[in-house]
Length: 421
Ligand SMILES: [Zn+2]
Image: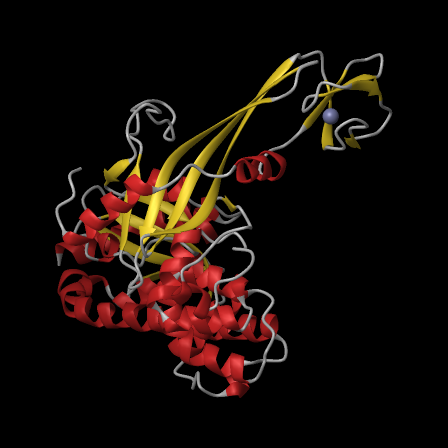
């Protein structure tokens, strides 16, 4: 991509002036971003894959090399070689820009030889003082692996994409330099797993990030950078948290809780709500409240729809209203309102409350009950006068099923009579 804007031209110029990174950074990456192995054969002879030294080891899962002092993961195997790769970042300043340089470190381990490392720079994220960003990177190749790059291609301006963003979220060489504005806004120490470029951009553009960083709440900032819409919703409440020096273990639960307070119309500037002594209990309590409200809304919506369909239903099925037959124990009667269908469907956990049933001109819905308790719901065809289905709780048949079928069949002539009337 050719630079077009002034900003892009400046980035392209600075991109050409960057120097190779120091060996120290690559050595740090080799030590801290990769796993290191000791391969052990059945005899107990163990080989350090970092330096090639051999000794007898009886440890369980980890050990230390007596020669190079590396901490190693023991693998019982006859394998002779292994390959490992990892991304790491180095942060630098160049021509007034803050730049995150992402490197791919590949290591080839071979028994009895020193590990061979190879470092390739893949990507650079550029930021100016106002948080404006650009990407210079190597070209991606199309293939099975998303993160494969043409290592001979130039590092030049390219469009940002998910793969670049993904690999840029990696360990940072701790000996980094940051532009004065970033340091003033609180950038220091560990990145705590936050993608460096995202954290730096937030610090340059959002004073809320600066406030959290300076309060030492990096884990909270990590959550809010990943969930920016939550930050907008919770910020007023979060300021109360900071003012009260309230400790939050699980920021996800807290943000969820604040969202529920908002839904319930509570004052999220009030420390009484925002800083509960038992967060989990308060969260669960509001979750239950909201569940009840939602349930009430659902029933209300059902009722509203029922009323809208009531007239149509009466016109269609009114002639059957009042029909009832019994064998002394079981009473079968026609459902005579849309609401009755909803209630039947809710109580029996099946879908008779759906308009496909009560507004179907070709069938009639009846409810079989004993002492008022619902047993089964019957759908009777108004063309063949046969029972289409009869179902109990959660669509299962009941012990009364055969008796109900017989009772309806005996009385089907009454339905037929009303149909003809
Ligand atoms: Zn060693």
